[in-house]
Amino acid sequence: MKETTEGKTKPNQRAGRIFNLPNALTVSRFLLLPLLFLAFPLNNNFLIIFLMAAIFATDVADGFLARLWRTTSILGKVLDHAVDKFVMVGFIILLSLFRGMPWWVLGFFLLREAIASVVGIILLRKKIEISGSNLFGKATGFFFGVTSIAYVVLFPHREVFLWITVGLAVLASGSYVYYHFLRKARA
Image (cartoon, rainbow, N blue to C red; front, top):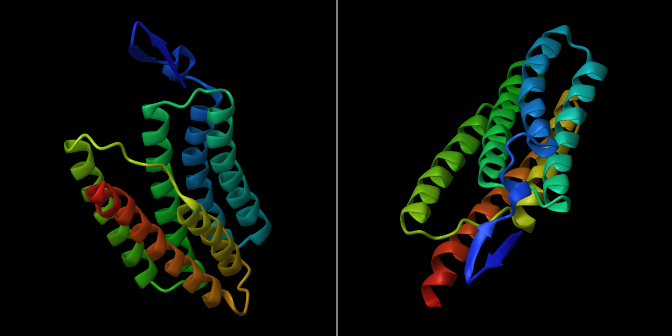
């Protein structure tokens, strides 16, 4: 939230704090990832699912608390986004190595993130504010979690969840392009 003083806006002072619980949760998500790299070779599904659930829970909690307590910050957003990408790539690598997820999934998401990074740089250079995750983005994240769990437990129809996740990722990317380039270009 921003406060207005004499026509100028300044960031909420609470949002300027680097050390807060939402940022700590984001960092904890990053620190939990190496534990997954230790758990997968042990083939302990309970431990793997427990760690994945902790990672998913901290992802939901950090954003919720940052908005609730009005401690959102540019650093928090960048950190959250970066950690999300590390976690996603880590999950895909582990699921491909140990649970048979197709390797093309890694290539697809790496390409998607590379394109999103280039688009983000273009938007920043044009001084266009980048929107947060929309409904398609949140649905992609949710189904990525479902797909990950389905691959851990070797659910027989896990490919259905994989294709839903990929389809939602394409829709999310398309909706961001539409919002930032096509819709704004008409305005």
